[in-house]
Image (cartoon, one colour):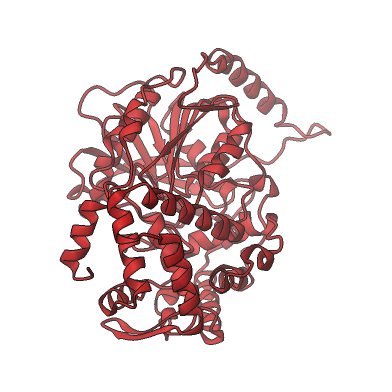
Length: 529
């Protein structure tokens, strides 16, 4: 049952029932150790944990008491295939921690932890927070980083988004990355959500933790949800910030959620006097700019190379910018208005920004960051556990009469990338909705084009004790990727973790919203206004 923040929460019987569920699960596991003919089944391979000295680049960036370790985990638990080394960081609070720690799966898939921001993201939880770098990512070994994709011969934005040359170079780079990894002994079939969830469970057992809370901030929610599906008896409560849901097709989402975020931005601008003055008709500006760029792409030579900024790239840029909304303000309406007026300064600045990342921009959340270090990990999850089991439907019909959406998402080179990656087909269960009675708080930004609130509303119909909190001033990742995340939302999260059976005070949300005036000053200082 989906429980909104303005509903009265009833005490959950989940905690009462959890004890006998664990006992029953233990009995089932003992009985299942034998096959039908009395022969024991193959021994499930377990992991081992050891503490290590924290790397200097970690310890010097974290202003907290931390412990580092390595979980040596089997590549495949039900078969051979060697071991992986998974990096673990435990953050200790200033005071005595609560008994139940937090397992944090980190931010978006394939994005390395930003240790300079972690303290602000975890502040106030009052618990040990254990962060596990998922296999293939962060400091875990082997890494599934793909420098081949980052070093394409021609920057993708140097040509129209549907360029055949860019598509070919991108797919070839993915194939080259795969060949290098596989020839080095990496088994790509080991990097899926089922094994990643099992890594977390093995870490709990190795650390002798009876019960913990789980938390994900971004698309690593796919791992958290799989853990919630498979090991619910060990979870006291769950927090999912900006989740991506198992049954949602990412290509359908790219169109639907981007449109939804645009419509919310248009409505927010119409309600703000400063934004109305800068962009009296933001929706008309967006569509007029799209039409102009479709027939006459903006060709510019900027510091980072030549740019061919067409309607497809505009939609990719807009989605990326919407995902990066952070309080207290946004300059997107100002820039859209400037681009619609063919303002040379705005065109050059945004064109230069978009060339600084490769094709992950607009497809991987927060691709602006330098921390996207494991493209292959993202690719494996998408190609093994997501795309084989989701229905694209008629994407062309969904794009309709908007060529930019067609170029950016219907003809996306990512649609062809899985054939080049060839990581096999995962367990189809991971693509089905998760049903649970574990108390779960879902936090979503109103302007998130990678997980719009209506998706969360639908998913939470399967959560007996689910609560949805929508931030009216954020895009993707409400409590992360900022040195000063909003204390209102973080405070609500912390209070909820303290008592997930009670509804926290959410009155501070009413005072939140996008600000445009301060942002306008920032844009003027940058020379766009």
